[in-house]
Image (cartoon, rainbow, N blue to C red):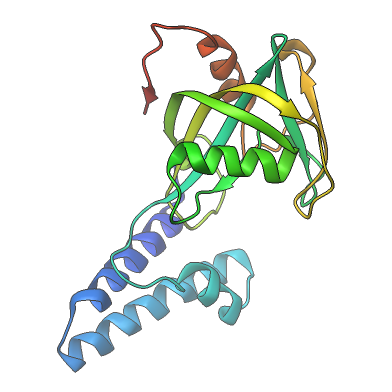
Length: 205
């Protein structure tokens, strides 16, 4: 269950951002700016992240507040799945990250696979669209939809980059230490179960 303070801070941030996007009255704008400041103060107080940095991370967006989108490529070869080792935490995840504006889901998947793992892939189907915060219990301030896409490996091999330090194909029973904020054992198991299943129905929570 999400912590109450985090739930309140996120709701205040959503209300203030939407209010700032649509309000014209200067007094309403002033009130919504104060509500946004309160949400930042709550997040800063409970996470020990300084106000200035939290304002940038948590309250830097403008316009109507919407969830962020994280895409993950489930790339299979010889019944093994491709994982990359994240430089940030030294643990392993499916290639992917925040979806870039101007690209479709499948275009983003191909882009991330090339950038992080050095491979060319053919996206086949969406496996699941899941709410990150229903699985990962931490103080992350955003709502995130995670899209998992099954991909066919075409060619290529790992190339040095700024996000990952190595890559490899792994069997389900021999996975390395996973970066749980990015993907869990249950999610990788889900990807294996959906592999080559022509009758697979997209999983949503």
